[in-house]
Image 1: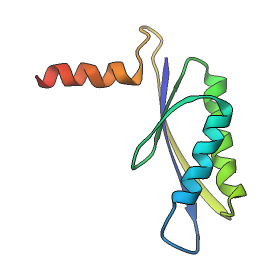
Image 2 (image 1 turned 90 degrees about the vertical axis):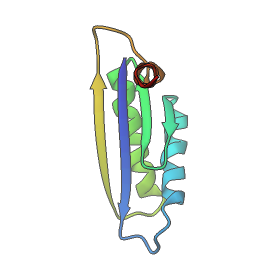
Image 3 (image 1 turned 180 degrees about the vertical axis):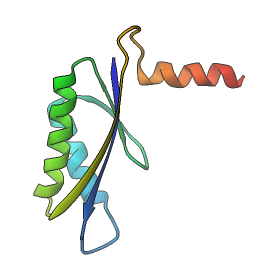
Length: 100
């Protein structure tokens, strides 16, 4: 299972609110069909297919340009674990069990 976190930041926008750009990026992820989870600081994704992940990243990045940004920075963290099939929820559950 491949887990990834993406943060896309448009630069040089006319205001401080970025929600319209985030909405455009998330809409692109929906179109690709990848499993994702939006957070206040980025978006988590998971897939078993690296091609789907990179297609989703490209789609989200390009969506921000289509929304009017003239410069975009995209940061990606990828955890590609192949010995065991663990989802994002499994990772959180593992930590929560240790906290009890």
